[in-house]
Image (cartoon, rainbow, N blue to C red):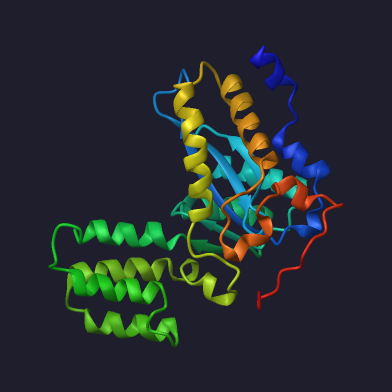
Length: 271
């Protein structure tokens, strides 16, 4: 009975294409993959989905076999077909496979890496949790990424590079930051752009309970149907715990917020 009902359910991406007022999307997409166990695959595979930041709506979703360029191309192709005007992608460090895919469909898109993930990688490299040996350097990296120094981030970076140019380990980390520089400070261009993927991590935690209970799926088809139902259901549930920044979403679901009949409140920078 459940399989029959899930098979009848509308496809999440079709729902976005046909029943959403696209003008209410602001084009800031938080993207991530939730890994699930599917029979026939040695390792878990990613269910990649994207949440529109301003509306908290799950615009796009796709069960993929890996986080490859082809998988991301599929996701961004669907977004293009939905007519989603993508401006900024916020993601963790999947740049190698993501950049060619997103640029293929959205050549002018900006990318913001999740600073929480990025700084955690640095913390792990320096063993900061178990030793204070590199704590001062770590704090300086933290202050650089979160713009605690103020001023120009390029100038602040060069000061650190000059200060630690003789320390091979620190210099390696700083040069790594240099390689990703264009993707670490996009959030400074607009205070509506998040510098983390916290929003989608919350969705992941909600989905995790359901996925854990399922204990894996017998096929791609059953996994796809179940996950599609999960995100469609999430889009129909009212938000209850949104922060002051997103208080306008409380007590409504994202589909209501994005429908043409809902009295939309334009969000400005001053808000």
